[in-house]
Structures are given as C-alpha cells and as structure tokens.
Length: 181
Length: 267
Image: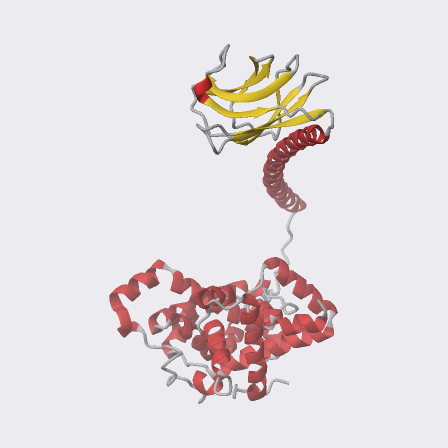
C-alpha cells in the first residue's frame, strides 16, 4: 500500500464502471498481490493461481456494474469473487486430475509450511503469531484455505456457532496488530 | 437478537465472507442500513480482512498482468464523442420504437409465462400436499372415533368384561370380551393373539346354555382397539376364540382354541 493513491474508492469504482482501462490497471497494481496471495493459498499451485487471477480480473472488469458500494467495500467484493473462483478451481475436475498425476511437485504453496514468497515482509505465520492454536486453526481454514464455515464445522466436528465466534475472536485480536480502529 | 448479540455471534464476519444464506444476508444488509453500530462493525471486519490480505500478499508474475490486459479492450471510452448531428427522420425513430416495444412485450410475455408456469407448479404441489394432509386428518379422526367408542364401552357399567386367558396350546394369548347382557352387544378387545396365515381366521364363540354360539370372525390384526362382534342372545356363561378356516365354521374346533374365559357371576 505504499503507492500513491490516485483514486478514492468512489472515483475508482466510477472510473471502472465507465470502462476506464487505467483504473483497472491501478486496481491491478494495488490489489493483485493481495488477491494472488489469497488465491494461491487455496489452489496451492502457481499454474492454477495464475488462471484464477486472470479470470478474476476479467470478472471484476465485466461485473463492475453490479458492484454496490452500499453493500460492501470494493476489496471485499473482489475478495469474494477471487475466493469463489479459487474454490471452484479446487473442486473442478481439471484440478483433481492434475493433482493425481502431478502429485506433490506441483504444490508450490501451502499455508502450513511455506510463506517465503510473501512480498510484504510478513507471512501468515507471523501474522497469526499472537493467536492461540484454536484461533490460528480457524483463521487458516476459513480465511487462508477458503473452507466454508459449515465445511470446517463438519470436517472437524466443531459446532457452527463456535466456528463463527472463534473466527470473530481471532479477527478482533488481529485488529490490534493490523491497527484497525 | 440485540445489536450486541448479533455483533458477538460472529454473523457479521460470516456476512462479509459471503457465508450467509441469501435471506440472512439480506437481513444483515437491512440492519446495517439502519444501524450505525452494525455498519461500523462490518466496516471494521472488512478492513481487517483487507489488511490481512495486504500483509500476506504475494506478487504475481509480471507477465500475468500483460496477459490479462491483452484481454481488456484497448479503448472502450464511453465518453460520447460529439455526435455529428445528423437529421434522422421521424419514421426511423418510430420504427425503432416499435421494434423496441415489440421486443419488450415479447420478453415480458415470456417472463410472465415462466412465472405463471412456476406458480401453477407450486399450486399443484400445494394441492397435492393439502390432499395428503386431509387424508391424514381423516385417518386420525377415524382413529379417534374408534378410540372414543372403545373408551365408552370400557367405561360403560352395563358392559361386563370377560377376560379370556390363553389356553394350554397358546399360553401367551389373551383377549377380552365386553358384553352387554341387556342389549346383547358383544365387543372384543385383543391383547395378544398370534398372526394367522391367509387361509385362517379367528372365530369368537359364546357358550349359551352349554352350546357354543358363533359370535363372529376376525383377523386378529385389526387396528381398532375394540371390535364390534355379532350380538349374542341369551345368557352366555363363557367366551372362547378358536382358529378356523377362512369364513369361520358352524361349530368350533376345540383343538385350536386360543383363549377361553368364563363370565363371572357377581354382576
């Protein structure tokens, strides 16, 4: 976020909505790394992360007209688009086939053991450093690996309500580190 | 739920992450419109997630940017160029308008037809549902009637109860007769009788003046708690149930007697 802000969020959205290519470029320069980080955590291989990043930006470009700033911040909206694309990719046949034949070699990124590619100096591990084990687990599953609340609840036998409140407690702790007022 | 409870429940986080159902999501959205506290909390959650993403960002290859932007049309300026003011004849406008109108009505008609179809499907499924509920209701009602009749008879003091315990051949069997001496009515209540084959039926006998009198046949698997049997004239001294071929017999086969009970004299 060191780049100079040329646009306010409002200006950026309206520029995008009038199909201004430089606005998309600005969006890409400012957010692609943040989104790419999310995506690669979910799909785990560079090849698929690249595909999702492309599809995602094209979708943002094509769907910007339905973005409603009353409903969410622009980043949240994009975040959910990329997250859903990444999850779809993981579930797709192509992905499963690939995993079978290429096995471990194609997996270049995993939240649990690899965060050396981070650009912003701080990795997932350091970010989650102050959380206890339970909280780290929930944040990793839901936020970084992209599992739904109900998937985590079912898979690890944690009540849905507990998943929600535990995630909340974790995010509140993270607010302090991230200086969210 | 109070505003605090909603915030504490973690639902707002789920809302931001797109985890809620459409309905729940609308609910939170509406709430955020009217409630400052909730709106601000949602914003804080969004900012947290955003900053988490920034902190753990990973730079994609530069060539990826190029390949994305190759797919974005170079110039799609929406800013209208000063349109050369050509004079377009009115008829062209009218033609365009009528085509547009035609298309719009067409789309609307199709739309309505789809909605109408959907409504019709839902209606017919509701009707079916309704019918099955009505059937259930009738069944329950019938059952209630039977239970009421049974209860009345059991409670009616003009009926005397004759318990028929199992015979040697069927020690576990047991059934009871409710018999009204004045009206000659006979009711049977089965406590435990074994299941018969299709070729067989149970037959109730009343012993009147030492002679077995047919009091009707039954299958033994009746649902009603109490079964109305044939009336028995005269003073019965005992009742018994035997197994007979389908349709019953004129005289009982004693070797198949399942239960037998004598009328007590005290009444």
